[in-house]
Amino acid sequence: MSELKLPTYADVVAASERIAGHAHRTPVATSRTANEELGAEVFFKCENLQRMGAFKFRGGYNALARFDDVQRRAGVVAFSSGNHAQAIALSARLLGIPATIIMPHDAPASKIAATRGYGAELVLYDRYTEDREQIGRDLAAKHGLTLIPPYDHADVIAGQGTAAKELLEDVPRLDALFVCLGGGGLLSGSALAARAISPSTKIYGVEPEAGNDGQQSFRSGSIVHIDTPKTIADGAQTQHLGKLTFPIIQRDVDDILTVSDEQLRAEMRFFAARMKMVVEPTGCLGFAAARAMKEQLRGKRVGVIISGGNVDIERYAALLAP
Ligand SMILES: *Cc1c(COP(=O)(O)O)cnc(C)c1O
Image (cartoon, rainbow, N blue to C red; front, top):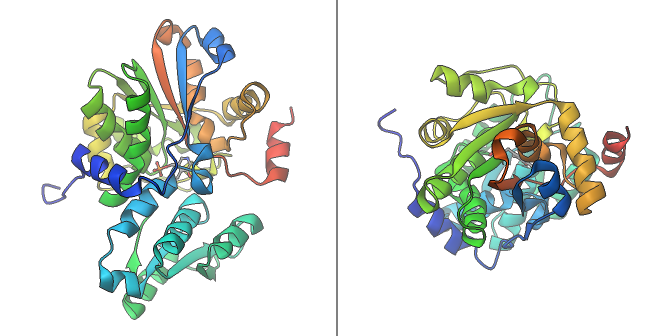
């Protein structure tokens, strides 16, 4: 463990300079209804309004912008069925780097089309019989491609941390910050930023109840692996935290909380009805946990990162239905 070089707040600052003018500085939204319902002041960082619809563009662009000439010419490879694929595909197009994305052939058609639309080459595989990491490693070795993983990479973590950095610059003195948690790229990056800018802010990671590997890991002190959890929060269906994300989370995060799919659906309805925003299920994790903790948050200043807004419209309608 001691040989692992963990990213620092200086890396988050460098990332914010690298992505400036390429990623959006997303707005911070407030809602009188949210404030009244929680008895607190709530500030939402709207990464559902980020380019390609999620914060993952920050980490993807930061990682690719650091490629040297040899890496740029050869290209990048990534495996993902979700937002990381689109983040890498779009960043690669903007930087003129060839991209290969490995996706399950039964991924939502809209995600396959979006990734292809950004000009990436797609390699489709069977998620029940083939190993995407092996396919990725083989392609990387054969063609000299650089593999960028979705969360366990120093440049990805540093890029994701820029969302919390912006939020704390726009809204100083937050008492608490709620961050969605899958593999921990967003949470570890956010923790680096928050600890540096606002040391007294309490930082909470929030997972789906069915996939609480992060909470188990945090409490037991070593990385716990689980089977792919069944939850509507498809951005948080990760099986374990990363070798880089876990030690940062252990050191800098105050607690890991969980919420049910029913709570996520209630917040999807809240964002649609009250704030006129499309938020994907995973993007609702933070606010659902804040609402559940409202007794402790009374009178406090609360930051919530809304991580993304990518959800197929038919699925969205079905999830909103009572
Ligand atoms: C990837 C993702 C997450 C989880 O992020 P990690 O860095 O893996 O913890 C949360 N929300 C959305 C919308 C995502 O795409």
